[in-house]
Image (cartoon, rainbow, N blue to C red):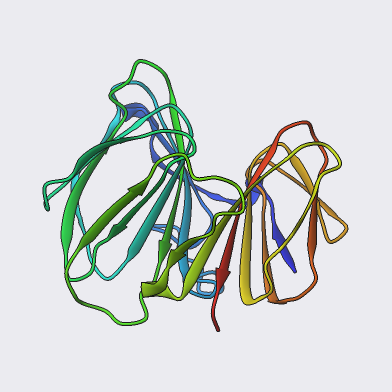
Length: 218
């Protein structure tokens, strides 16, 4: 298990425009040849947008993009005609496939924080696709078969336990609260990359912890 603290993330975005980003992997000008990907994961970005701020229309291709809102509301529009609002507890996935353009904005009057994960598809190309699941529950895994990946959302109270999925690659991101994972204490923004995970357990150390666990094939 390799622990990466929130303070290890690469800073990015455009603070003058109300966008503050923290990147877990090499991204944009922050190039590290030893930190390009983990399993299918090629990015895990923590984004903070002030009211009215956002990312203007931009392209993506050959990437599975999964978004989890921590607080606030995200407005999404894309070139295939989808326009949605994404709130806390919703899972949004944009399969950019052969190419798609989209806009992401904070149209609300409160700050927006979201975690966005990019996964490399098993087979590039194809047609773009979009999906949103509102209010996903604990113990309801969300599959991204195009990338050979599964997302598990867990919310833990103090002392509550949950099994970490067994898998060739497992990425655990702490959204809020504090969690003990295999003897390590992790706080919001911290992450653990586990190779050949087996019989690992997470324990809530605070009243309301939330974690995203990505199970990825070898």
